[in-house]
Length: 134
Image 1 (cartoon, rainbow, N blue to C red):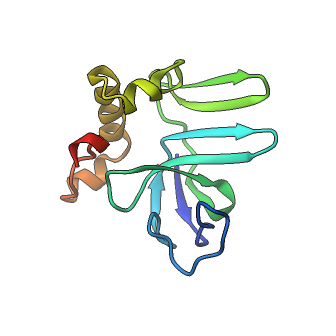
Image 2: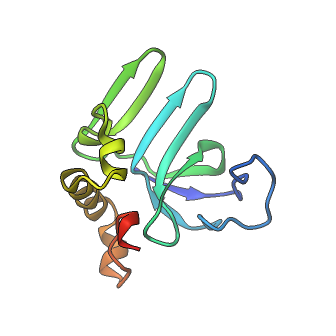
């Protein structure tokens, strides 16, 4: 699944901004996962323009370019929240392990990023890194 940024997203505090430090209007991004909450709405997870940071964005600011669902994605529905993404990423405690520096979780993210953003990597972009590598 690939989306194109059609509008500058609101800042993290909900304020309008002229440009985003994370995504660029007119640029297409592979979707890494989807989160739909009955109150907070739908968000997509993308690799941001710095090619190292994963970020969540409201779907309102994007349009679908490629509607295919990535191989290996699963859907989890729990307490009214729907998540779509790589099976490993949706496992309980996965993101805590990732941000705590767990090597298996870090490798699972790196693997998925290589799969989803291979075109970017082939164009000479840096490989995604874990935050502790900065």
